[in-house]
Image (cartoon, rainbow, N blue to C red; front, top):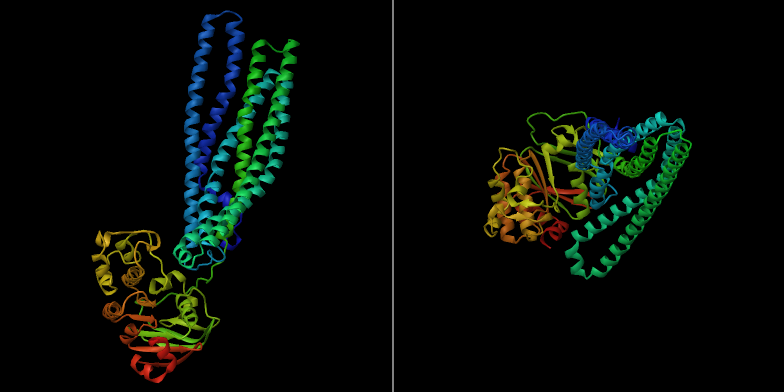
Length: 564
């Protein structure tokens, strides 16, 4: 089944199918526990009829021993059955979370479109947990049904009337419980949507906390989050109200069924149709019914919430990729010849550009938006509206995005760092046998780590906030250089460093990338000075191509962009 056709039902079936062995084992052991529970009042009735009434001490000891064995069996079956069910739920949650992360990180993109990171995180945590719990719900529900059937069979053997009360009343109770779960399913979906939105807003505000403080926008941010949080709270309360209503109604209906069993059993005992021990067993079994029926109500509520969460997960998994995977492959080894032929995208208009293998090319776009459009096309975050971008003669649209990114890395200006150490960040995309030191030296990170308490092993907080802006830029650049791709495209890697440091980085890039294709999309004069040539893009078109010093003398737009 193609990802675009994934439904919530598919997610549920796949979740159960992957853990079917644990679910089956848990259901078997849980059923053993329910059967043992149902046999306890039966055995008590037998003790009364065969030992207590007849004052038979030997029979009393025998049946008490049988009762003890049953208790040990049901205790062990409950323990291992619950363990199996919890394991199935936890493993399913883990598998779903991994599937969602792989979809979000897929080179073809698309899953993040229209969704804030906090919303995706909520789907991968809370929704995955609820869908994983469907395994536990199925185990518990199956065991409860076995317990009800056991109870009905025992009551039928005692009295056909008592058995029919259970056999006819239970399906009606289950059907009513299913109807009562519908509002819960709807409100659970709304609750998760609101909770995801609140998480997304919170994550968005935290990531921009410094900016908010800088512009004095704390009060507006607090008001925004308060409104979102209140909406989430109202949705949660509505879902809780629906769940409480369902639980209350199911409990009331269960009480009616138990009362009916007790009433019929009492009348039969008064008419001497059943013995005293059988009456005790019937009353005990009617009380036993509370457990399985409450378990079924819980399982029904869990399934209702799981269905709502499964639809949300399916929406993420079924999101089409931004770019489709092509069937062609790159020739080996990758030479690094890049060609743009008549590329129009966003603000770009009919861009023609040939980048030779091993060339160090500078690109200056007088409009930053045009630079962003060019980077999107080179990274294949989007395909051009018209024209083609080729790598070694193969159009990028004909390549799998994963294969493209293994050959050509486009390092964005605002690339984030990850929680870990400085060294971990630098080597995140590096070859396993690669040496990160040359990249760290070229990017100026060697000087950075000298000022840190633990050098390259210094811990980096989320998004690198424990480092200064210039330090973050240099670590991100070192990460891109350490990846050692045949083609490297870097966007404004030195905007947060001083002139001397920028000149050192420029020389380091040229030395490290010698013989490999490198494109510097920047307006930094020190970086442009070390390039073989520079392409000037003005008004969305290629205006000129020449060495940096020549473009400074030829074009006023170039001087304004680079020297201003």
